[in-house]
Image 1 (cartoon, rainbow, N blue to C red):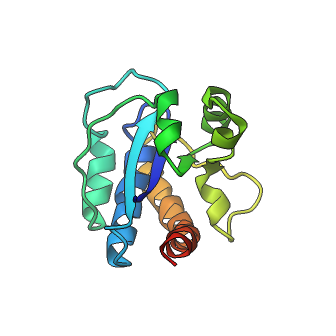
Image 2: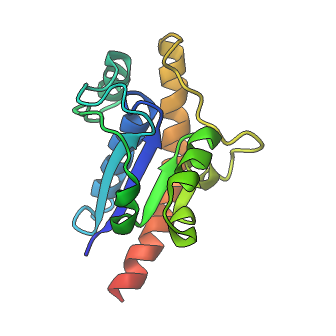
Length: 163
């Protein structure tokens, strides 16, 4: 059974699809794509069925990542089949933990930047939606920095289960 990771932001069109694409690439490069499933969702359903924000797609493609995506809303029932739920900011963290059916499910929710040892203080990935391209570039830098530590943590879980 694969280890399942879901990235969650507000509308699932900027930060979480970016994190999904970057982490999926890291998982594939590590040769773990048979053992780890990666997806994303939003805390709200405003953009369900839409593609990622064009600025997200542009930044991803510029840096060699895939940009295909369809937005969806996170459902409480998903906790039962997810191993890790990665929130992009503390607002998402709180909303997801409130949505969790059990304490065990709430414990699956973590902040993405908590996996970046260089991140200090504010662990939020800021929402780039209302700004310019520089915000999307900054978001990508934060996602890439945290993905290294996240991959290491997931690798320990996957290799521990495989042993």
